[in-house]
Length: 340
Image (cartoon, rainbow, N blue to C red; front, side):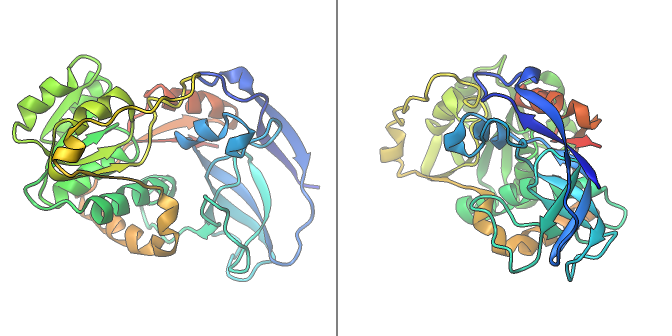
């Protein structure tokens, strides 16, 4: 009998998640049936959306459930056509080190998450990139920026959470498209990385620099595109500096995820009416059926050196909650993953 370890939710998050909100359990896995595979996880992903899902049953996560999340795993046994032993898959099986799962085109996808997908041959690139720049964060950057915001060469693009998994990709794609890129991050080391290594034109530490003052300095004529990863007061200030017919994409709200009280509706600045701004919320799941269309150019840009990446890797299955809590605190550069 094959055993699996899993990290389960002991209680719903109240404020910042804590190590005692999780527990490691073991379970016996059933033998394979036709159409199923047995996998062993190689990397876990820790992402901001997990904070929301762990807040209560209305968000889909019950006490006692395996903590939801993406992983990249190696197939060690297969009774499913098209999923051979030795290949790797990306799937939302949560924080568990072994999994028996149904796969294949006949398996309906979840409401929000992607169905299990084979990882393409990445050559000499790290396998973990299938959870980062060549995975969900890459898709979350590529399509919302290019199709929703539609930046044009010469326009000004502002990115909040710019040193995170999505924000760091967004800024670089905007650079590739010939835009002036302004980033906001939460430490001087992140500011230095974004400016010196990734080539952002202007980067500010929002903890030590007033957002409005920074934008008056870096974008005196206004902002054309705002890619919002954080929400909150920062976003209200950025929106007040938008130009006529500016476009805003909201992909996350990490500044609000640990708030215990329900979020209050913030009055939008008058510039929304005066400048006829457009705001749209986006989830990567909208582009499930166009995954390869996004990953292909992202892979090419990585290989050409136009798109750089950085990972914050935590070692060890038992350290997954620690990595998750650290990511929510903003301790990561780029994508945060756990190596099993």
